[in-house]
Image (tube, rainbow, N blue to C red; front, top):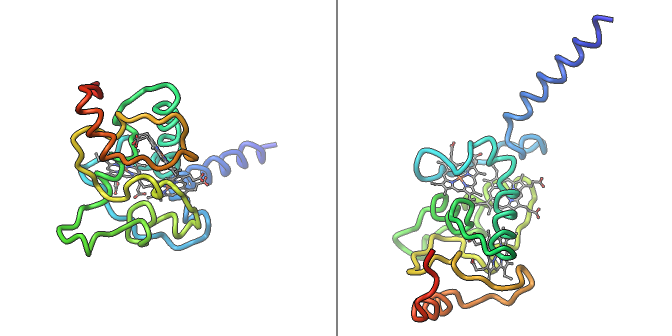
Length: 162
Ligand code: HEC
Ligand code: HEC
Ligand code: HEC
């Protein structure tokens, strides 16, 4: 009867080890080279981000789109600002099509495809009005907005302040 607790201990130890591994390792692929983010920490602990980053951004997107909650913490634009270095020479800018782009570094290995960058910028943006101040009613199926133009319109209308 001593066998049962021992098994549980082993299962717990295995779970602990697995939790430390990035998802692509679990998928039996070699560990991708992930470019390091700016600053010394992410918006959540690194292990949590590895596992759950998609939940944070997708939840934030829904909160922004449907409930008008606008915070910067999980903004996709902020992920890109920290994680993708802006090249001096635009011709040398790394885009999401390259496995060197932060978001693609793992996705390529894990064979994950995201359509986010068909509309969202995959490089850091410097716009006057934060992009998260713009709201469109339908997400994903909405036609891409001209964000630059929309920002200018909002600035003129004096809106958009937090
Ligand atoms: C068809 C175009 C389109 C696609 C595809 C798309 N988005 Fe968006 N998304 C928008 C628009 C337009 C807004 C509102 C303007 C803004 O805030 O950038 C928005 C807003 C957001 C926001 C809130 C603002 C911010 O910067 O945090 C998040 C988060 C977001 N999208 C995440 C995603 C993710 C993740 C994907 C891919 C799974 C995705 N979007 C795919 C058009 C799109
Ligand atoms: C203030 C800058 C900053 C912001 C904003 C930021 N990150 Fe991070 N992120 C980091 C740093 C620094 C690390 C830690 C890198 C390390 O530990 O080697 C990190 C780690 C990660 C990791 C784990 C990478 C690995 O090596 O396994 C993921 C995934 C991640 N971030 C995704 C995101 C997403 C998605 C967003 C937007 C919701 C975001 N980050 C916003 C700075 C940032
Ligand atoms: C540490 C590796 C890693 C990094 C870095 C990373 N991802 Fe992911 N991402 C994954 C894995 C693995 C999955 C699939 C997880 C699953 O299916 O459960 C995923 C899934 C996603 C999904 C959900 C896709 C879907 O269709 O369900 C979104 C959205 C996403 N990532 C966005 C991003 C963005 C944006 C970045 C860059 C800011 C990024 N990821 C960086 C590993 C990573």
